[in-house]
Image (cartoon, rainbow, N blue to C red):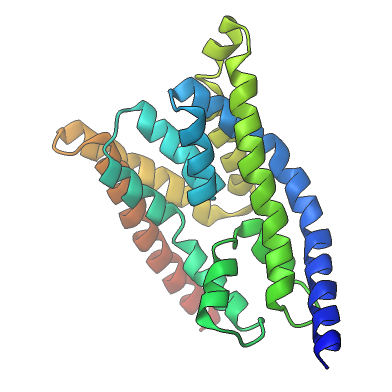
Length: 239
């Protein structure tokens, strides 16, 4: 009985690792770019690796770099990244319906590894999602992100001076590259981006808020307003 349970655990773990290989490969260039930009922003290699190890959130980490470069306070960065990652509540709640019953501590451990990519892979699995499967899946994604962040930093340190200087605009180019494909597919994102930009500009113009709090509040307010508007439109269409 014990040997059967152990064999099943190993099988599920291996399946999770195999499923995570594609995510690990996909994370490679993004994590390398993060390490390069972190070095350019002024972080140490320890700070860069620790951020990836503790935060483990690509978009939030890139946003944090831009806020750090703008000398924004810690609480403002925390609030802004919290808003950016608030979707994880929904992803975790959805995934909880598909996973096997387990101790809350077990779920908390692999829940840390839930990202857009690991969620997508686990959510489309035909079988019930088990803890060892999630551990294998998240381990591959997590290892790739943390290790390649450090490699990117080391590479950045050894780049010629003119290339290091050019990395200053790479962060903005990355955000544009991430945003444009979404703009083509979803009107909601277009409205959200425009409204957030307008509110942020107004708040900055008044001069009463710092850059960090302005971004955090404009993101939160625009998200609530846009979601309410589109929900109302959907209800009207259904009627």
